[in-house]
Length: 266
Image (cartoon, rainbow, N blue to C red; front, side, top):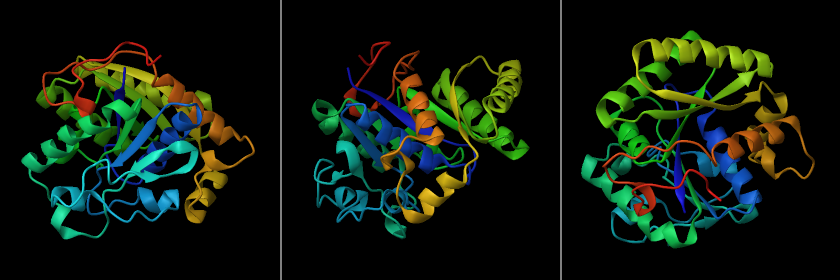
């Protein structure tokens, strides 16, 4: 059964969009029918990092000029990409009705999609919480900095208290080693579990990498490189970690029209 993953972070600048793109490409490369939806409206830049130029974006759908299916742009490995648009004030501050319309519209993708990856705005705004709470598996991107810890905790606290989200997946970005990443996760989990009744699942880390930074500059996601690398292996590990495990079964509107999903994507 199809399921959704919301890729989120408590603050900007931690590699959230790069994480969403490379996870989506990894899953598509594995053979899953994958769609990447960019909901970081107004400042959306996933299309830039993908190196593609969509002709339409979410603004066209909200103005009833296109359906969500019409917005799907082909990307590597058969990935479907839906652009949020960039630099357009009209979709920068959507109201809740428009955000719920976007979530509902993803039901039209359900028959052709195994996994929907949603790149949500950084922080803990109402928009972020709406888009996170509609997902089956929220993935929080964390780096080993006090501000990242504090802001990620604030996001999880808000999602838990306001939307009753209890299961979160954690990926550590820009770590020097697996041991360091595990240490960051353990410390963050201890802090979070001291105050919140939530479950955090560690799915892996992405190494601090010049090659990854170069891929961003060149607009060529590292997953698309023909030769294997430690970075691509790391993204594949995280992607596989999202295929199984607990899902959130809240009563609100869900991506792909789903109410609940099986414990395994297979």
